[in-house]
Image 1: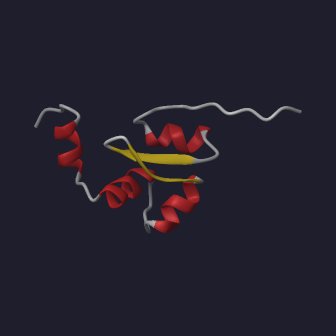
Image 2: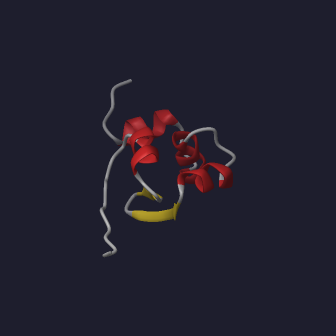
Length: 72
């Protein structure tokens, strides 16, 4: 058996949780954390990966949406 790695980049954190063994949180090009989804949620005391993202980055949904060019 060969080891292999697949890098999946997505903003859909529910999809990442289902498909990935480990999830990384990137903020402005910096890898903040890389570990299994359950460990991330436990680390940040979060119910979802989205909640963990906001705790890890210190951002709110509105701040992230504005950075991504979302509308108010």
